[in-house]
Length: 519
Image 1 (cartoon, rainbow, N blue to C red):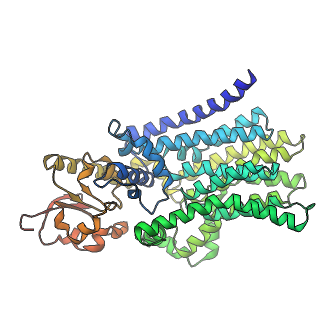
Image 2: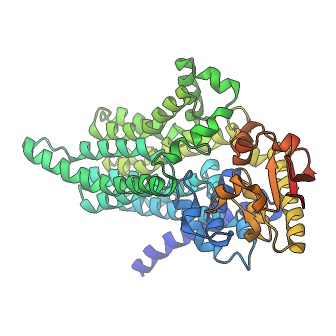
Image 3: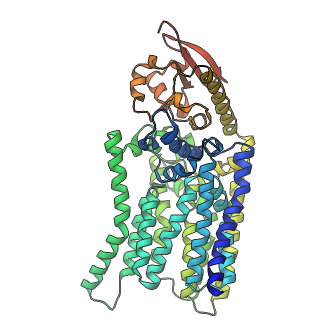
């Protein structure tokens, strides 16, 4: 009976957290057809692999890290029977909900294995899962929903290494870091910090120098080999297919390419390092209470200056250091989600802190940590309602009031119009760049009549657009300047070009040109 209870409780917890995400998915995606553009872009990448005019695995793209889109291929198999999997980004949302449940399950097992009482284990896990940020990103299909699980897995691996020096923890840690890189590039500084933390945990004062060195060498190899392998593979695929190993980093579609559209505020921020530091601190603060509790109890028990604390702090500051560099270079939008990492790191670490505390301190630690998670949640929710501090999350909570929702509605109207035209012209082709058109690509009824960026003959169509019957081009401003059609034909939107007539203007934001018979 005990064995059954031990297995059924975490399973029920997983189901509870997953099921709790479904109402938000239904509200955003099914009822109002709202999905975060970055999340829909990943769904669009997966969609083009299977349903585009030129289906092939490389159509997944080489800007976004590939793992979220690779995972989304599975639910998209059912797209012909459930179009909303692509059109409303439901495939990505369901997966992040599953990962939210998996994260709760991982934390439950970690806390129980560390000796945390059932009461505090339940409180910590539920407070974490329903923390506004964690809950929102468990329902919106964004890469943070995937990343959080593997971040937790990595931190748990480090803690277990300090706690038990068991090689099994290193194997899970290595897998976690590799998957982190395949989801987000923040994994690079995180991997460096984790490797340093693991090496700290490998040192033993009682062992001779050579034995310590050999242990550190073996541990480093086990920790970093999967991560390095993932990085090398990604560089190789970029080189082999795009002809540039760093295409993901410096192409027109990359983060650096898009950063030319940063507001004047971020441009001015570059020149003031103290202002950057304030910017990072302000956005990190609501995620720091659990870390503060861990450090407080370390101080109270006179264990503040230790390898464990140094390892924890290395992981916590790794991504903020990257953000400092990117903001200083003018290559970051400074979204709130870039600063949430200390929160899951501290919560995942908390179970090990419990095991290292004396019994008289544990109830106090459990209660104060629970309070800190709640305080963090309330603080983050308040941030989410302030556009200056949290523009993306504010847009999700108040999506019907923002321009982005209007743009998405316009894209759906364009898709409906194109679908109507293509239904009458089954042999016609529409040339468009995939950049900024995820909503169109995933909602159109005839995706095989679109010539898009991932098609292997896309550049041939750009060189000779007359191979297509229609051209869809956005207004040449803002991010749309990176659109390949605007790069090649900068006056196309405003003035058209010879051999093409304006077929339709969509709210002065997009224009559809049709090839004339003389072309």
